[in-house]
Picture 1 (cartoon, rainbow, N blue to C red):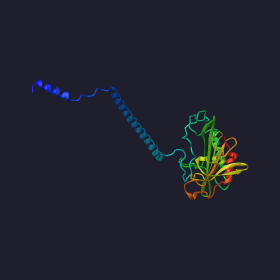
Picture 2 (cartoon, rainbow, N blue to C red):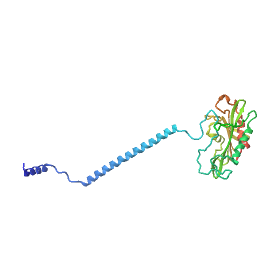
Picture 3 (cartoon, rainbow, N blue to C red):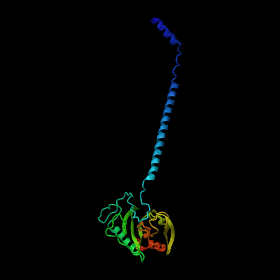
Length: 287
């Protein structure tokens, strides 16, 4: 086959091929737009799936954390006495109150000055209220810092409410009768505190503990007394009273001081009426 014959054969083949239809720009543009919409839908679905997976992961992590992390605040009730709770985990934007040296305190606890002296006074008043027949041992000179003290007192700044500094005074003492030991405690919140007023609602606020509350009448005044705790057994009974000026007093008692049941008091130092009256006692009405 020469060159002329080759060219003639190629022209013949091309003539036999059906030519493509003319380009429809409108159809092509519509097809491109539909393809772009499909891509965007795919991206949106992928993004939503990622968000759902992320949220599920956070929720799962939160659930696991809730089951494994240790809760803050007061420690769970145990068989032995607990130290006075320190709300040092609370964060305050206010500067600490000024100490007797004219400078702000290092933390919530007043270690000198009028507030500190009030807490010591509260301890002395508590000791004086212990019924006859019970002794109140003093702290040993060589007591370890890890041991629960037989006698303790502290004054702590709680918060500032409408420009008023609210303080908490807490004093506790071990009480013995024969070879058995229990514990009594008084806690006072100064005026301005945000504790409730209703007798049993107020009483249930003590250390977050719950129990069977009854209202006891002292003269013409109603006082809430928890006569038996439900779960938390750090104290067996406690009373609460809000004075007319807003000061709140809690008085608590337990037959336990230590982890040995055989060392518990056979009976509590105060009767329920006595416990209610002590919450109103002016000796525990501090500012």
